[in-house]
Length: 152
Image (cartoon, rainbow, N blue to C red):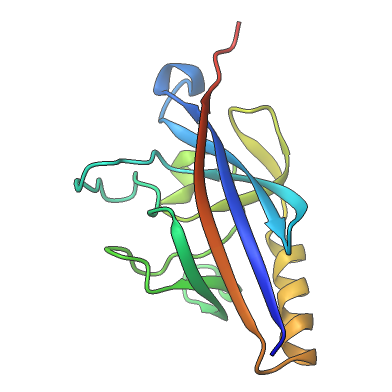
């Protein structure tokens, strides 16, 4: 069976002072091991305490499906069975307040925010894959590899 493996390697943790607002995490987003774009997510909380709309999903491996989003009114990748989260989608945005727990993806970053959304390009790639391989599997692995980044 054919498959696509998406990977997010979270590598920068920005505190609220660095971002001028909410804490976030910047990462690299890969498709089958090849760099595709950057990601931005809410703050990772290592305790069991989740703050609604301001907590990144746990590191791990998840199944991804393509489905219509009621919020975005278009097909957007959806992560399945994320513990303590519902409706986690990979979509565009620039900063943590746009995330609401979802991974945001874009082609540009200054290590504090991201821009030039990559969502539609990713969705098109995944749709093309599913047309060619209807039974094909799409998964995403999210890894924590934090470095701190302080602007001078």
